Amino acid sequence: MDLPIDLPITVRHMELEFPTVEEFDPLWMGDPTRSYFITGLSLYLPYLEPFLIKALRKASPLVTDPTVAETLDKFCRQEAQHYKQHEKFNAVVHARDYPGLAEIEARCAAEFQHFLQDKPLKYSVGFVEGFESYTTQGAAAMLNGGMYDDPSVDQKIADLLRWHMTEEIEHRTVAFDIYQHLYGDYLYRVKMCWIAQWHVFRFIWKTATLMSRIDTLRYGPRYRMKRSMKVLALAAAFAQFVVTYLPNYSPHKLKISPRIGELAQRYSERAVSIG
Ligand SMILES: [Fe+2]
Ligand SMILES: [Fe+2]
Image (cartoon, rainbow, N blue to C red; front, side, top):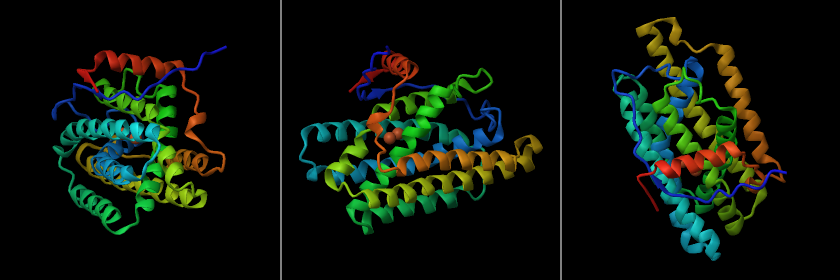
């Protein structure tokens, strides 16, 4: 019988390597759809993750359970590390100069600002949970499927994603527990899952389509995303969304594979500092 794997939330400070502007190939995962979609996700994170932190820090005074409060703090500190590292990779992407990308990113930044300023706190906390529940599904699929381990994948960028997704699994229950603790409103949670998940998917779709179109003109048809692959990506994302809408959904039920346990151990050993 497999023993349950203990996966504490560990705030690691990492020193990761990134490809130089010259080394970076937009098709860093080989397949254009995978490459541009994950790059699109990376571009989203410096807007999303500060929002996650601000929303939960705003909710923090309302949390009366000390265990939930402690995990809230660790969640915020992990997310703060994530987007700082993604910004380094995104700088390499931006150096390619994609006209139109800055406008999409500026709209995204304004939307998160609007959520924090004009929407009730329940909306923001629900958005955090909606996003996190999707990330949990995606992170488990990516790590267990080994999609970053193929030697044809740029291993510097793969390393960033493997570390980040491992920590997403570590803090998978935090936003859910905060939402349940403060509101526990099932139907509102489903609504916010829908809003948050399509928000990230739309951003990824738009940025990936734009980058692929520009690179196809610049470098040739190898950089074009096949329509069938885009539809497959949409179907896979939708299947992951639906899991999070079910009344009995709980990130506490996720089975942690030994593979993820090993990654957590490996990244703790490589961390420059912890805490
Ligand atoms: Fe994160
Ligand atoms: Fe997260």
